[in-house]
Length: 151
Image (cartoon, rainbow, N blue to C red; front, side, top):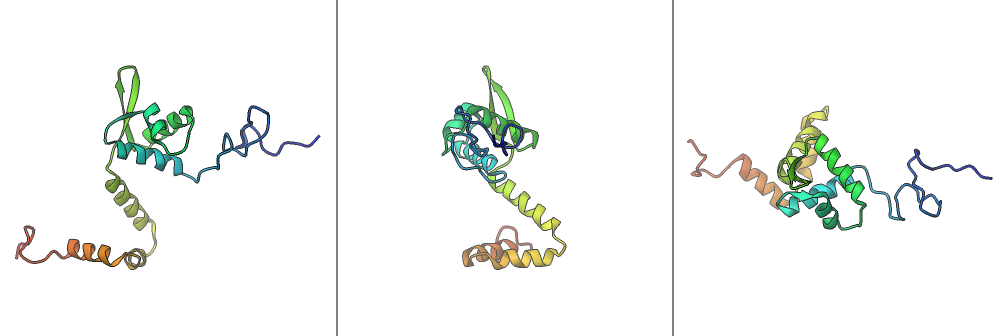
């Protein structure tokens, strides 16, 4: 009898027939680290209003178990990325920050982790499209005569 290499407690999940599905559950492919959290956050941002876990579950493109959605929401709450309020007998969740605020914070964290901030900035700016570069130029050096100009 062959020993099982993956099972409960080792990342795999047994299907009802006793077969190991590789940890993905019901045959779906396993997501990358943080991918499901990103999908849940995208659903919350798109809704524009607080959502119950069941609503988040329905908004996701791929079918996800309710308990999995609830676990992800609990983790996002612990990380300070969502707020939770009681509405009736269930909890509703909403993002703490706008998508753009969170992206900017993540970019800043990456920048401060680099040993050579100038090199990181050069690489980032070098990957911008022409229109993104123009937007950045206008933000850094607004045309004279605008509301923020003090000269």
